[in-house]
Length: 67
Image (cartoon, rainbow, N blue to C red; front, side, top):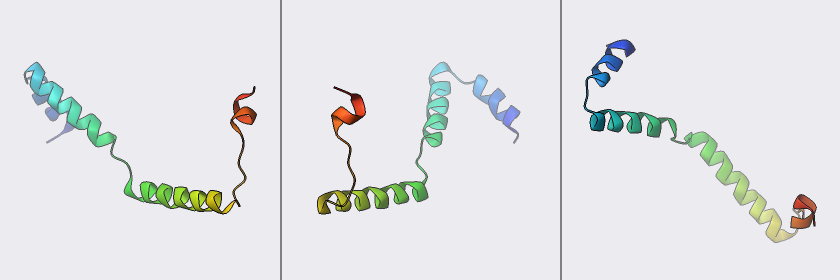
């Protein structure tokens, strides 16, 4: 079935059914990439460990946003 056929069938749905289709499609686009998520978890754990050890260069709130 082609995308155009799917779209035409979706147009024939009730508003509530179209909403469910749209919401499901949007949610499928918002799923995080498992590989990227894993890399960010590793990086955040590394940064936390470095912070706790005092080896991470930090910047104060005032330096970032001014006084």
